[in-house]
Amino acid sequence: MNEEIIKNENVIRIEDILDILIKRWKMILLITLAITLMAASVSFFVIAPKYKANTKVFIGKDDTKDQNYNTNDVQMYQKLIKTYAEVIMTNDLVDKAITTDNLNITSQKVLKSLAVIPRADTQILEIEYISTDKVLAKDVVNSITNEFIRSSRELIPNGNVKIIESVKIPENPVNPNKTMNIAIASLIGLIISVGLSFFLEFMNNTFKTREQLEQILGIPVVGAIPNDSD
Image (cartoon, rainbow, N blue to C red):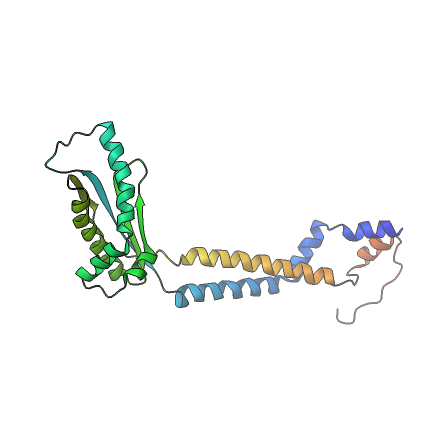
């Protein structure tokens, strides 16, 4: 008999789940809305938007040289791109770039948000910088690119670096992603509120209905005391 009661207690019907959700729908809604509103407030008013400025440069032969490429030339310049990427990320080059253009920022701070990306199997190098100041982001990328072009002529005299996509002032922030933050917060709020609803319900050991009592005890209920609050 006891084993049968325990088994019945562990069975959760779909109707029971729906009853719990309907019973506590206000709590679920309030918690979800509260967490969503907090995430929206943080995304719109607390987190400073960050902007990404970028440019692309092509690494190839000097204009005065034969412009025909063979397989060895292509492979050489593709490997050279990785070397150039390391050169751009040096403190000396960045410091020289921001000093030349009198930018009000340190090279250490620039390097934390600077990225140089060699595009796989191409002769293209992308330089990007992220900042809360959209104009500064554009100026930093522009200064570093110009300094890199000057330095590349000293490193590889017969090489040629061309800007194929000029840097522009970014219009839209890349971070925070407000829509994504709000969507994730809503989902988290829903999960927390639903989980809390089930936790509170399972912590309540009282019998909710006559049918539940009959199911647990296995005997019919012949009478019930009416609830005055009904």
